[in-house]
Image (cartoon, rainbow, N blue to C red; front, side):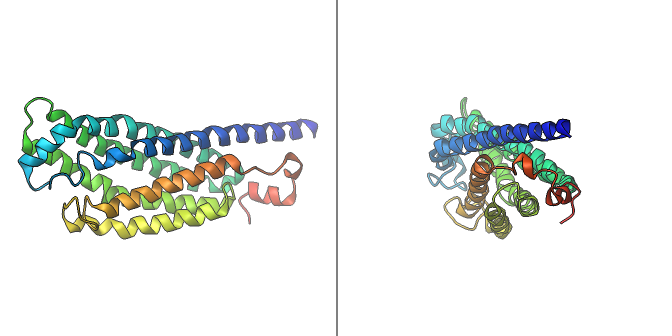
Length: 258
């Protein structure tokens, strides 16, 4: 009995370490986003319309360094934070309710897809900026930029909506995070779905409900805001003390029963 209790206490301590580590990476990723926030409006911002291909290429050439910093450095750090957070989240879900392992796997798998889409889109924009270093080809610059829009937009938003909805379901079902963060995840998922059809609105960068307008950015920002609140919740929320482990309620959770 003592051995079992010691193992349970060790599991709780390990989970607390995972909470601090994964939550810390999540907060760090959001801090990287805040630090790079001004760069999101440089290079593909409202400086020059995308349709004016030659002028747009010149504009990207002038702001290429900022584009490369955002896409290759800042966004990569953000995605590292999200990846570690999701890995920790998956572990805690499985520990809390083994019956939710399929939910945890779905959450982590979709999260990997979201991260991959973001990094591919970043790579396309970084390639456009690099093309301007030596005698830019305006058509290539515009083409690479436009190719990133569906990944940042409709495709990425729909995948993000699935990830957020899964996170909300897991949160409410396992109580791993504060329940209000689960409802926030549901709201952010709905917002991402509503924004996804903006891909049909054209490529007007200064527009709102367009493929590269402000609406898709709002959807992405809501995902990152959930990322922050969920990370903070992961750090501050405490699991049940060892004395509660082994109670009927805890045993019911371990079998996946309500």
